[in-house]
Figure 1 (cartoon, one colour):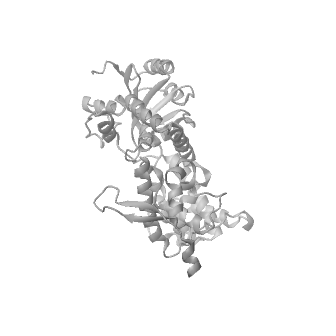
Figure 2 (tube, one colour; figure 1 turned 180 degrees about the horizontal axis):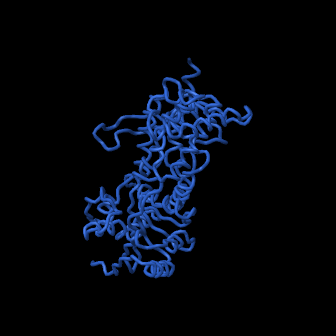
Figure 3 (cartoon, one colour; figure 1 turned 90 degrees about the vertical axis):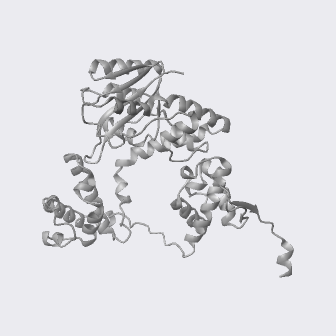
Length: 406
């Protein structure tokens, strides 16, 4: 059936204001963005695409002076926002407004909960679910350049053209499987993750913190915060202000002079040398922090030699459970989640500190299976190496008589 929706291009404030009124009346819409983020701290918006049941819309954010009416619609709790792989687009919303929507449907997440691969591309989902083929070829476009060709605009609109229908179809499957609540849980977690991207404790995710003492950790924390603020000030990616490995090297060395700084590999670059005074000031500031106010040492799990092999076995168990439950294993958990599960089990299996794979719907899909294998209540058996699901899980029957005769 031909798409009868009106296609509109908006390059004026009045046009955007009219669209915002339309979105509030519709109560539900899909949106996506095209942006360039390689050279800036905050992504440069090139286009915003919107789809409702009546309109397909291209917004030129370079031409429209005030995008706030659109963001007000996105964050209005009375409106439902449908997206695919919403993380980066919603991060732009958060950077622009300090807020996030409360009613989000991410079809990529929802698809993973009904058995499609996660993370799955929109092109793949459209082909599998709606039997629709869309063209690609514009992934390297600089969306800030003008004018944009008709092919580029068509490509951009394809990102939202079918999203509402796709969401409806996948949500029907969610309801058939009784998993709508699972999806809502994942959407909330997605929004929490986006909101936490600039959280004060994100410095804890810096690679290489493990060996640092508490004084060096304070230096790393201060350097991380300074780097973030400096990147925002000059609108450059944080890695262009200072790489992670250089930041950690400074914190480890605890330099006392510019000579100490210059002795570090890769520090002798104009952009870093220009900040020598500020960096040394931060290091001095960290030295003045009382010992009882220093960050706690970073915990470094010391896994036993056999944990890696156990994780490999549990990966097969996880994949088997997900295939049987028609859920994408990529959405359920990763190797690090499995390591967390093994540490929890070896540490006494505290019910007060359940690993992620034992919580919520993940516990129902695979957590109990994983625990059964860890505790020896189930065994793994290869049934057909050529099959998509080559293993089976069997319950272990314990014979008390064998213990008596031993």
